[in-house]
Image (tube, rainbow, N blue to C red; front, side):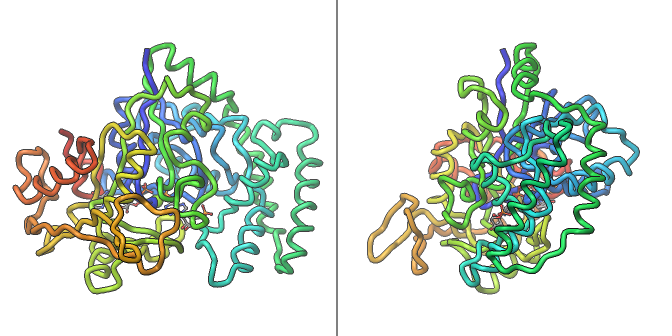
Length: 421
Ligand code: GDP
Ligand code: IMO
Ligand code: MG
């Protein structure tokens, strides 16, 4: 019997999940998103074209794939529709290829306003949210007030929408936050109408039945483990469980049905938005990583903060996710570096720790191990044996420290720029 394999990010998001899912999709029947929403921006590059997906799973461009938006996802119909239009502009009809869980929650126009109002009220302490309404929508989900995709078909949909909207108006008036949703609301209702051409499913039954029929399923994570609501750098996190456990609650599969857990990391680190980032670089090296790695948000366009690879955080993420294999991305960005650093511990107030702390103080000092750079262009490499020795040493160190094999190495943004061991 097949299990659900998982691809998820081990850092602060933007590890390259979209690319990897697109590469792996030919080996799977079903690709399913299990959490998050349009705060995600997953980039795919193939045939000289680039795409950014926010809600639609990254398997959508592969023939014969079934793509499921699971119950754990939150959906903004307007953003979903824009995405579908961009995909279909490539000449594909995805009506039969995209299935949406009835239990996925809807992001209302007022959820977006509440997100903006909450962030504005926080001043310097703001989270740096993508302002897509993620936090307020998950609050309504756990507060048992939310609207779900299945509700769209209810004759009482409009009344329930209005009731929730007026509740939000009350909250917004307390924030004294000026807003106008007139245009967005109009688009929102049109987009909700358009969603009806897709099949609304009980994704727990659909996913488990695919597995029963021995058809492989791949779960696609959004964000990263260090943004997880429970284990991330709280409160500078997103509002969902971005980790393996989220696959079970976000798709309705039992833990015993989870198979491989493929954890993705960049050969360095990035973070967009506020919050702790112990290995962050504020110097020319950080600038170089941003420039060569084109580290600008796929959803918001914001410059990403850049720094060295952090094994304290990475090992923590490997542990809480039960990672069985690693996937390393973007090492090509450091092709010309003389020295490459990896943090293996933190010094906090004179004590050295290899455990990720409850709170990361501003003066946390990473303890680094230095590696000589490989000083070669690895973008054309397609077999592991052809990597320079210095590069193989870098990988061997990460494997030894994490106890996980690095099975896939991405050497450029394109679908073809990949080495599978
Ligand atoms: P995701 O959110 O995890 O899917 O990642 P993003 O798409 O937000 O960010 C990853 C960025 O790196 C995108 O611009 C990708 O096109 C790009 N990318 C992915 N893999 C590689 C790689 O191996 N090398 C380089 N140079 N760029 C890559
Ligand atoms: P992908 O799937 C990187 C960050 C935001 C902010 C915090 C909370 O592309 O890796 P939210 O909008 O969820 O309330 O924002 O989380 N964030 C991401 N950072 N990649 C993402 O997704 C992110 N989704 C949210 O920048 O710091
Ligand atoms: Mg992204």
